[in-house]
Image (tube, rainbow, N blue to C red):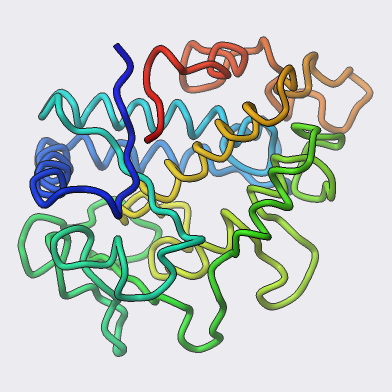
Length: 288
């Protein structure tokens, strides 16, 4: 039977406690840090050589869908009642709304060094020491709203702009494309300031701190954010019936993207699964 991922704003006090407790236990077991390592390893931008799997590529959505499933499995090994909730950032848009509450993810970082000092993931609680990072900080950091150069979270209309596009992705299948649902949702742009980021990317910028790096998994909000991104793929599929992951076949040997992206029936590293196999997850989970 499919389990249910819920809106974080609808969680009961008991559901919040169980989710937090499961996250802390996965961290205590040492499993959580491996998720951070995996995300860092597969964060390969356009300018580098080799395969792009997690970002700036069509596989952004199936890669993170499988990544979420792996974390959810780890959490459910601790507590079978737990699923990853999603944060609807088009509605819960302030620095004190869900999920930034004492009983869920804690709040903003302090002004001096952006260290999070509230909630269960504060370093002083002793349960969330960052061991795998792209900086020397061992504590969780946030800068909600990007205080020095403020920006807003994406709006419903900006999300709708992505959802309305009937094409999953288009050539050249990277961060430069201006059409296609994938990059409109992922959010790479050639603009400046807040216009340089939209939807998924702007949320990372808005949270700030460790969420700005390849080690963004160190902030538990990563999972709530990506569950909401995954929900958008779910909604896009429902709206555009019959629309599929693209490209269906890999670019040819003369194409600049040859060997750089994952086609529909190719394996998606580091797992033995294809994007095609991840398009329908209805038997595994659904969204409330």
